[in-house]
Length: 219
Image 1 (cartoon, rainbow, N blue to C red):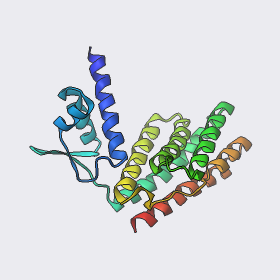
Image 2: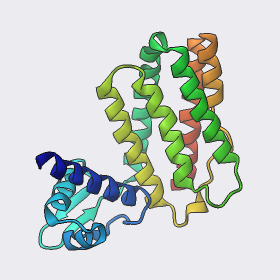
Image 3: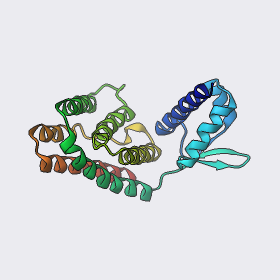
Image 4: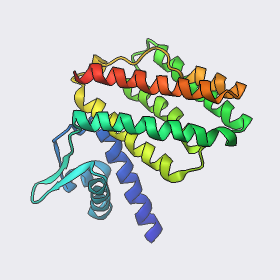
């Protein structure tokens, strides 16, 4: 019974977080428990637990007798997060490099190909959120291969903060266009050749190019 309740809380947590990442709940907007219980057709307990966890992660802020406010991401938050990405990801790559198997590299290559394909697509259904999900998937998987779970968790939280900042800043989704291609394919090719220096350079350039896109968005 306890496991079922915990699982339900996790499901509610993911749904709320997804809606925040997609800007369905906008920055500074208030969310109330009754609204979510009706929306997800669940009791108050798992909703309250999910909201408390989101407050602990500084995604929401509890406003007594009002509800839970979506925390706005500042420009400084964005800059700090992007700097953290450089530190975490470059060190993670160096740790992952001697551990990588052919299967690991094949997996990364598949994600890189899919990501570039979606970025190049003119299909209106391929939303910015979808493109960012694939980008995050590549970077998170590469970092997970470092074997450092704490580092991987920190990167996930950092990338979620960046996504929240992007969606909050945009007036309309098309106000930011991601580059048609990334440095992912070049990074994978470097890994296939066993060239760590080239892999590090491709990863650094990929993060810095995304940082420039963010700077263009917020300035």
